[in-house]
Length: 185
Image (cartoon, rainbow, N blue to C red; front, side):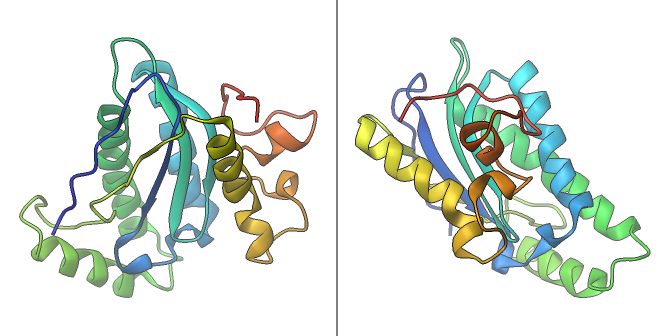
């Protein structure tokens, strides 16, 4: 069953989390993470997405995002999730080197079968649970949580080492994979 969370003021940054169905570890391969990165770039340029921080973990994604005037957070998020789910399922299906192909496609097909919002597959869990970050303290807590995620998971020693996040942008003098709009914490 879907939970209908709503955003507050779309001009204010929101912390958003969403995960793959059954928490399947899809994003252990760069080919699938790169689909998310390309989609983020597109949404920033064409969908009014103002991305302030982001990270792709093995089975979930965190954003700190707001929307440009005339756009909404939920519309850009909906479009991004719809596009990436199709592209990732297609990529998994066509990847002859994917050892987990049948198992993953089975999980996504099974989830899609039981969700009337989908035709064949469901890749992402339905809910996003956006949290409006209306105080500097909330923003700092979520920004730290997001960037420390790969450190806590033992993947890197410091946030700027994790390529698939905005840690590079916030903790070094280099630019990361996606152009972000910095927020002061």
